[in-house]
Image 1 (tube, rainbow over the protein chains, first blue to last red):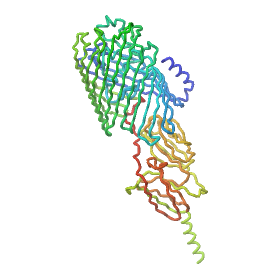
Image 2: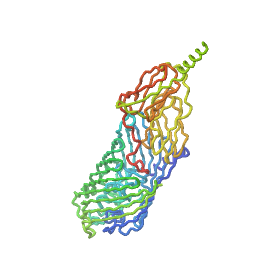
Image 3: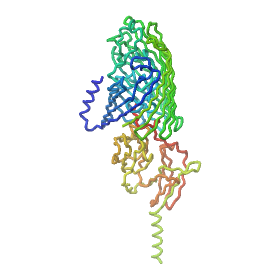
Image 4: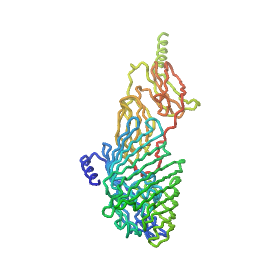
Amino acid sequence: MIKFIVISFLLISSDIYSAEQSFKGLVDTRVVSVEYDTQSYLSGNYGKFNFDSDTPFTLAQLGLQYTMKWENNLSFHAVGNIYIDGRNNGIGLTEAFLSYRNLPNQNGWRIKSKIGVFYPKISFENIATAWSTPYTLTSSSLNNWVGEELRHSGFQLTLDKLGKFNKSQHNFSFDISLFQNNDTAGAMLSWHGWTLGNRQTLLNEKLVVQPFAARSTTLATQASYSDPFIELDNRWGTHLTTNWQYDNYLTISGGIYNNNADASIVKSGQYTWDTNFKHVGIKYNINQKIQLISQYMTGNTFMQSPYGDKVVENDFNSGFIMLRFQQNKHQYAIRVEEFEVKDFDSTVGDNNNEYGKGITLSYRYKLNKRSFIHSEFNWLNSSRPARWYLKQDVNLTEQQFQLAFRHYF
Amino acid sequence: MINKFFLINFLFFNTQAFANNITIKVMDSKQSKVEGVIVYLTPENNTLNHALTKHPLIIFQKNKKFTPYIAVLQKGQEINFKNQDDVTHHIYSASGENRFDFKIKAGEQNKSTVITTSGEVAMGCNIHDWMSGYVLAVDTPYFDQTNSQGLSIFKHIPPGSYKLTIWHPQLETQKNEFTKKVEIHNNYHFKVILPKPLLPIPAQQNQDEFDFLEGY
């Protein structure tokens, strides 16, 4: 897919001089303190935060966005990220796509499309440069999973209806995406559960799989890592989303995701996971200063042995409610969330059950237009029987404090 | 004596012929003055030679808003767009004959377009969907926009029959206008009461105020 994008990009680049290029980015440096978490899920453990307890001063994100826009409403976007935290360092692309955005017609209908590798339209939090969230230093568990295991490699077609052309305050948007390279989506959600943080998986990265007991028995075929953006069955998944915006203070969205995987395949240590979920979100400006954001997701994922029996089957759900209060240079945010994984299979040594709840308190101070001081406290309590495989307590309460300097350029 | 009479008569006639000052006050049904509506007078006898207003109409893009939100110009007149933001805008009009679109870079001051057909020009930005602005192109040199007192003042209007039109995109009438036939033979003061109150003007504001949003 990336090869296709690069070739298309080069072909269009013959018209390079009539195009407008831009670089944008975000530098996010932090001091992090994590309690009661020996190791992060990213290190193959069962800690729910992306930083380990001995993480010192960190470059939590250096996001770079390159955009080239042509006069014909076509543009190319490449988003790269660098993470340096001493343990899970990474550098690479997170998205690369061509985008077309037609002008609306006289009745306010507009067609948009994307082709390449891009985020599914789910998150109400990760809306700023390089998929960062301006509200908090961590994405909710729901959206942190989107950043870890989901990416559309394919095609998206969007139909917008802008109300202002008919003096209406209602705006609608309908999207259909056809995608590949997401056959393992659900593996990490099953094996380490829901997590909280700001770490997006780079397109060139693989994820460490937790050392649960069945890895040496029933699931011995599974490699020690999961490749989140791999195509195993050559089938197309679908994601349908819709969005209703009323005036400039209410947005409601919903979507249905189905990666349409043929769950009977295992290649090079990677299983295909048949993953389906539904998601809804609301963003409501209660008044000029207070905004409510809430999202909920519920779904199912399973994978099979080569003999056709379900080895892993889980239902999952996660939801959060966030309230933001903004006054001049100050923004205060409180987010509460709850998540769950229910294990339905009978595979011994692979208990994926999980229940957790968390609270996030965040304060952002705007130094100037581009720079922010941001501090945040997270409290997260989770019960996960799989911790027993590592001789850890099933119940874990983690706390994290972060102080960040963020600069958008 | 006769000379004096002629002279006086001539001055009086002259005043009548070329110096009719017309004041139009626009009010709503609650007798409150209405600011910012477009008021124009179209001669019924359209043989008058309409001098073209030469200076361009200037529309700023500031804080990701069109400023002014509503303006009026004469058909054939030019709109000059001045981008005072530090981001590119993609300005368009999807209105009938007056369709146009172009990108205007941060700080760019001299993008212009000539409006050749009378009627509404509804403008937007294809990058910032909440941006919205209106220009009404009229086929007469006698146009104005009511001030904070709800007043429009026209000077030196030749006598004759005119169609007085009040227009505003938030006026919920057919074609967003309210018309009235008027005879102008002297200095006049008209009071116009709108049949419906104006709908609220859109805030031209995104739901999220953050400066570094992308199209996620």
